[in-house]
Length: 156
Length: 156
DNA sequence: AGCCTGTTGCGAATGCGTCTCAAGAGCATT
DNA sequence: AATGCTCTTGAGACGCATTCGCAACAGGCT
Ligand SMILES: [Zn+2]
Ligand SMILES: [Zn+2]
Ligand SMILES: [Zn+2]
Ligand SMILES: [Zn+2]
Image (cartoon, rainbow over all chains, first blue to last red; front, top):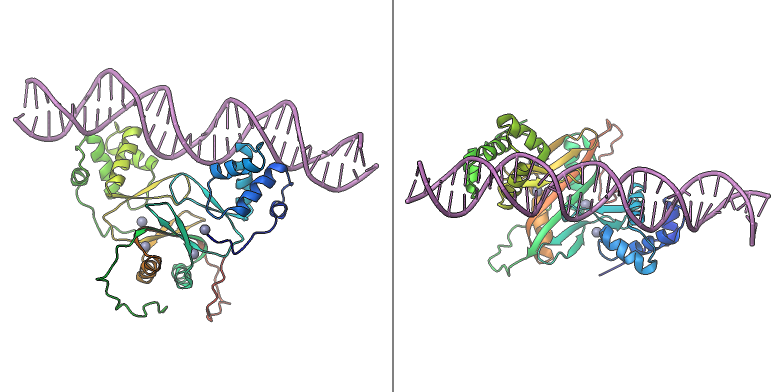
């Protein structure tokens, strides 16, 4: 849909992770940079093989694993039991998943982010990471909706 | 910590799911009703065996699976690759996970719930379910805390 | 009590991901 | 360009949570 934040060069990404630049890893890095969705390991492998057919499953998993550990890649588990990836150099956002189509939309809410920190703080914690996912379906044309919940975003 | 909402009888739980009441399933249902934490399948099995040692792994997984499908049980995946369970008849809440100790605290924020619905609506969706998890660590005694938290949305 | 059908335990099988290890290839140096 | 140290690779074995297949078993209704 959009790629407002083109990530750095694939080789740089690898070097940032302290990795040697190999043909296979270049293919994988390129896939991640070009990805406009949230591919899982299997998909990353398949796409990487279009660049370099010699990429093995082990290398795909290993590279994704290292990049994640180094914080250059974020992981998600929208559907249970498959991990999905996304470059970490993008601005923070959370996800809205269309349960019918599987489509994933990204959003940010400064208010929610703030409330989260506030809650953590109230318990004496500070947030290390968080996960916010809205599983939704297209709303029925909601005529009867009463739009009288005025400015309720007020953070206290 | 608290069990303010004692779930219905174990047998009822099973019948609500359209299941035959068997000794093994009673043991499992009882475990779920008594649980004050978020046990995984392995833990549920172990506890169920204290009631009825004949409960098998397959039955534990099968029962948990059915109860989840029927909506009587909620599932979580705080740590990747292990599913945890919790009765669905409790009031809604989200989770704060202490990444050091693994301790899980529950919280609710009417504001966040409202903002979530608002966001979904803005995209033309309605929320079917959602997941909000805060992975935290104990906050350092924050003397230097500057309470001037103006809109700085910067976060990691 | 007796039948019908859902359930059970066991072990085998699945699926995603990780590990082992010998062969191969970065890359800094000569 | 050749050397060599070390990291990386592919293939397949392995780990682990969860699911399946099936014959024996047991609810629940008459
Ligand atoms: Zn967020
Ligand atoms: Zn995203
Ligand atoms: Zn919530
Ligand atoms: Zn909970």
